[in-house]
Length: 165
Image: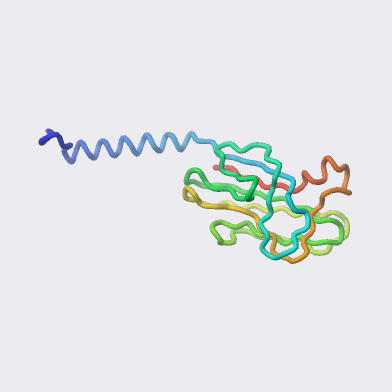
């Protein structure tokens, strides 16, 4: 029964449950994923440089920004992030995957001859607008741009991707 145009507690409860179910259905069917490769700076000269991947292959949900190298979660949920980095022969790469300034994964390849790529991943629970990015953590990291197989493939070996699970 409505009293003076207001909803009863029971009606309000049903309305809230209905809205919650509608919202949950929308977010469950939402696809969020991105993949970017080729870095802007192959020589990372300072510690804590954000590694910016400039060639965006896809960006469903619009979360990845190729100018900043940062992914901003458009919705809350569980995400998987992967990174692959290839230093040039004899050089190093030390990296970390960061969520809102907290390191959630890290890895490195240090002064190895040949072309050993290093990869890593992180599964994280994010809130909407949480920010994820990859940072270099060693002065003098140098990523592969050419010289491995063919120039058209070499720079593409460095990549960053993420998906809402």
